[in-house]
Image 1 (cartoon, rainbow, N blue to C red):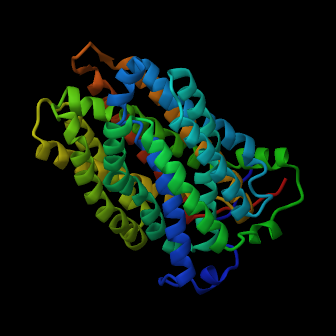
Image 2 (cartoon, rainbow, N blue to C red):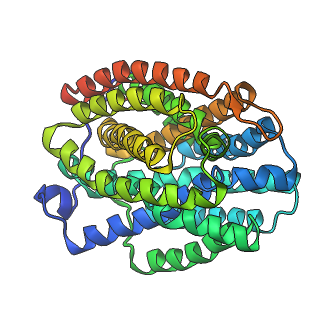
Length: 425
């Protein structure tokens, strides 16, 4: 195995200035990537709240619904691994637009799906392209922004999770209640196409990393990244974080309706309230990570997650305000982990390895999440018209993975702070 030095920022105006102030173009890049991430996150996240509609409409069981969720994740993981060796050999803008176009095609297929089998196929197509879009976006952030600004950028981009709750999920539920569960996918395909045109027109080429890439085959490049010691800790941490998060996500809406007693028609309001609070907290978490250190913010997020997930998964009949308060605090804990982890692990790879590292990391994230979704579908049981059983077991698993991920992130933080000389093969 080989060691790599601390991350080196490609020589761009942003990195040379190392300024704490965003330029106009940096603001555009941040906004554009955040909007792309918003459409990706909404496409994935809305399947969970739509579960209460999709499962009876297609007459599928919790285990089958878990497979619908995990198919997206597994296909995204496969595409991430397959493209990792090539990810640093192209202009990142072109790579981003190609895979985003494929994502929109898959989303359109979801919109016209009329049965369980076709929906499964459509989710596979969507995942094949979506997983790479996210990794290329993170590579662009690492190329264009110095480390001391990355917490804020990651905070804004990760706020897409909250924005999807505030804007996308309530709108998706409204569209679903009015025109059927397929309608939100058609909405994403239309909006995403418009966003893609803007990115094509105004995003500059991101190709400086091509000057740093050694002349080696894609397979050699992939194996070099996979065999670099400091990268392996980052991969393990990313995968573990995903396992816990995907455990709960597919069944949150069903749990809120059947166990907590929130009426289906009030779910949009619940997601609106929790998402709005998260939109405010996300950028604040990013700023805090830049000021006090990403690892400290990650540790805080772990503590908050452990406490709130234990409370949430044991809720009985609760008022809308009570559920919203618990979910807001849980979201703050989860986002603190995600934002801090993204900022800290982005400092691990060399500029010439960023595309491959991000692709592999995204693949592990998706595959780990897919495995977790399948396991969750097998663990939870729903009797006809009754509550979900064993949902608290999923909470215990999340607590365990959170504790282990905190230990691993400690070593990531040490690796970033104390780089090692590189040894090229």
